[in-house]
Image 1 (cartoon, helix red, strand yellow):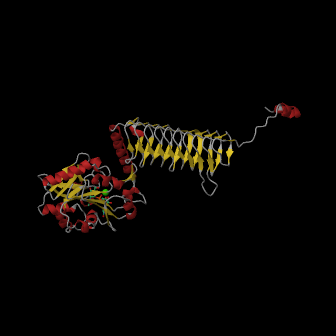
Image 2 (tube, helix red, strand yellow):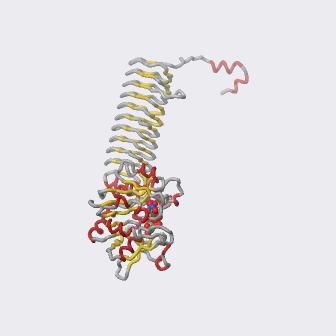
Amino acid sequence: MKDLNVLIMAAGKGTRMVSSRAKVLHPICGVPMLRLICDAARLLQPDGIIVVIGYDADLVRASLKGSDVNFVLQTEQRGTGHAVMVARDLLEGMSGDLLVLYGDTPKIRHETLRKLLEHHRGSGAATTLLTAETDDPFGYGRILRDASGRIEAIIEEKDATPEQRAIREINPGLYCFRIPPMLAALDRISDKNAQGEYYLTDIVSIQREAGARIEALLHEDFPELQGINTRAELAATSRTLRLRKNQELMARGVSLVDPESTYVDLDVVVEKDVTVHPMVTLQGTTRVGEGVTIHSGCRIRDTVIEPDVTVLDSCLITDSHIGHGATVGPFARVRDGSSVGGRCRLGNFVELARSTLGEGSKAAHHAYLGDASIGRDVNIGAGVITCNYDGARKHATIIEDGAFIGSDCQLVAPIRVGRGAYVAAGSCITQDVPPDALAIARERQNIKPEWVKRRKRAKPENDKLP
Ligand code: UD1
Ligand code: CA
């Protein structure tokens, strides 16, 4: 929208969170709270977004890195009116509207902001605010209306009379101001009140006395507008947004077997015809391609899963890439920039760290593959271990296309197994294996016939042996 600027207040600490971090940094479904309200504001395509920061300023700034917002520092938090005053230099000379929001209200939908703005612009008011009704108005500013129903003032809980405190219509804290009259009214706000703060809400009575038009629009969905003050509210809000995200995914063709127990971060992308079983967590920047099935108990973070992959139960996959049609798990751990090629099979209890597995390769049971580059169509037997760490440094293992590593081998890195080579089961490999060779590195078996019988005969007490 043209001639629109947004100001988001995010300078407070949020004492009731009992945290050393600023409240607006706490994540909701993987995203810092402040970014969510910024995202909603950004969908209105305003000319600019101003964020007022104070507590933890550097971290709050960093949480919005890469975005186009202007930061204003409010070193001392002297009230919501003061928070707008510190942005005065930026607002001076602007002619349009200013939408003022709080950084701790992540449930607000951009549609609601749009509704507020459209009403504001349609009515030509100097100020428009949303209000809500609740049976538990404690702590909120109350909306005072005159006999004809026009808003007169907002009175804070601490300044209110008992009669005023009984009012159920409250101020949730979303305002749209025409900027020049707002700046004029801001000059007239004082801190002579119960809290000694500059109340932004005083603009209403100041403008009303000056005869300006003020609109107060009742919003039906109060919970949407509620901010977060405590950890319990953080958890409840996370749940609300998580279920909202799950509804969106299902509407776009994702099957969630149990949406109640599916945890998908807000930035995660899931394509259609994906099936997600119960107790699955998809985090960060994860992208899941079409036709993928993810079974119960998996957690996948910052990972790309290409189409038609099957992830079996109880896998932990982080910072990695799983290629088209691969099967992973159950109980697999893939981490730290690993890449599993198309049609690969990474099976039960296999750990892959900083390793690549070429197309069609298999490691089906109990293996540790660290710092390994493994080619195409390689077979890694059960119990294979890359010995990549010498106590000080990590070393690379290279296994070329078509190689076959028998069960229970150790590959002592740095090491290379050539194209098509075989390594016999139970080998401890310490020298490179040339292409197409067979390497056997194990003790030869020794058979002692009748040894048990002889032992038993040697001494009478040996008779008790099994
Ligand atoms: C404010 C409203 C009240 C409304 C309530 C809704 C005022 C005077 N009162 O009260 O009518 O019902 O919100 O939640 O506006 N902030 C700053 N700098 C400051 C002060 C606040 O950035 O100097 C930020 C806070 O970090 C917070 C938000 O503004 O995110 C609201 O501040 P808070 O002190 O919680 O306002 P309330 O007193 O609850
Ligand atoms: Ca508050």
